[in-house]
Length: 264
Image 1 (cartoon, helix red, strand yellow):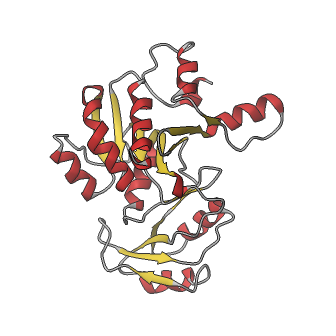
Image 2 (cartoon, one colour):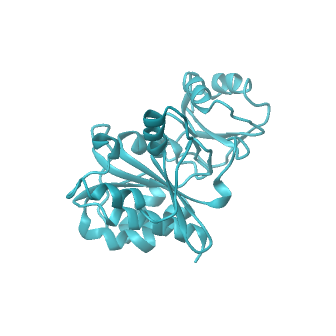
Image 3 (cartoon, helix red, strand yellow):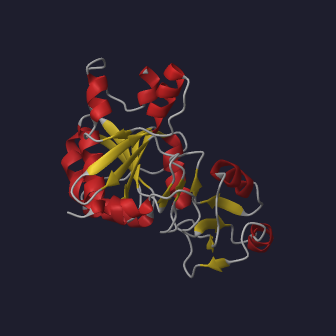
């Protein structure tokens, strides 16, 4: 099986161990499509609601027989599953190659737990080799582009509009050493609807598809190790599927939500 398939398999095996009913958010992209097509139908009986990040994903879900709920800022999502175009060691992401990063970020923001599924090619030391997507309001593009040229002189416009009917641009030739800082700065530019950096709303779990398996990485493990030993470990790699979840189950039988930090 492909690395993308194995990453999707990892998300399925993780979610299948969590007691339902669950509300799920589903992202957009080729890796997420594996999860949606191959594994989401197997979770049908566990789900009480489902949200979509794009028109494309909505159509796919409806074709699979799912009822897709309308987005609301007050919605409650237990788990959000999505891919990424780049992932750094601190789980900061670049997303939006498919132009849906604004709606993807909305779901990631309201989800209790964000699972990011990727193949090995998406793991990078520094974000920026993949062009950074920016969604810009149709009526404020000139002002926004003037400010964005401070970050890159190489900016391209996509032919298609976003699902929100806004312009989509890509910033090229970047080296994003401080993702959180850059995300906040770009979000302050008048006319910018959203930017494809996910540092504020980065995932808690990253599942990396390998050629014949997957590896599950949990960002909060580093926090536990730091607080108990005083030394910082930037990440903890789990070689056994859902290893931490299995361990926690010994102490938290009947867990119905996946906001793992809440009971650590």
